[in-house]
Length: 68
Image (cartoon, rainbow, N blue to C red; front, side, top):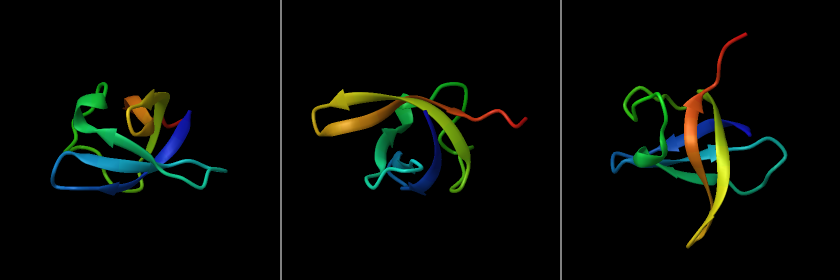
């Protein structure tokens, strides 16, 4: 899926907004692939997989989207 980094905290997690979806997805710094948490900027386009976690859907395998 595709989305945009909506918020980041200083505690190593944040939320991704998805087009056409009301609820944002949680992600943790351990869910990143090929990018560091510090390198992610609010507003960056990302790709990710959606998984069902203990507290509902969350993003895993979060990567910066390739610019075409």
